[in-house]
Length: 71
Image 1: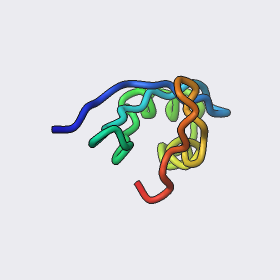
Image 2 (image 1 turned 120 degrees about the horizontal axis):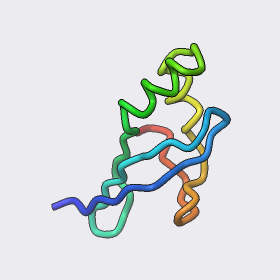
Image 3 (image 1 turned 90 degrees about the vertical axis):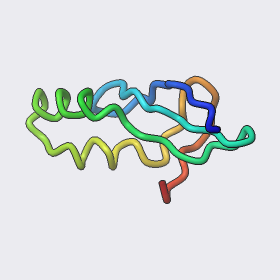
Image 4 (image 1 turned 180 degrees about the vertical axis):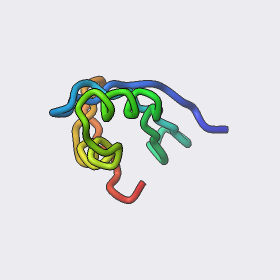
């Protein structure tokens, strides 16, 4: 069973919520909150893809982990 938690990541487009999944204490997957990204994209008149790309490699403010680039 995967343990899950929510974190915020700071980007040039604003704070984005991500759901992190852990297996045996190791980060194995993360997903951005789609509706949040959709709202920001609409407000900024940019593609959702730009928001997703802005998140890669950003340090998570809650625990300093780096999101795996291959997720």
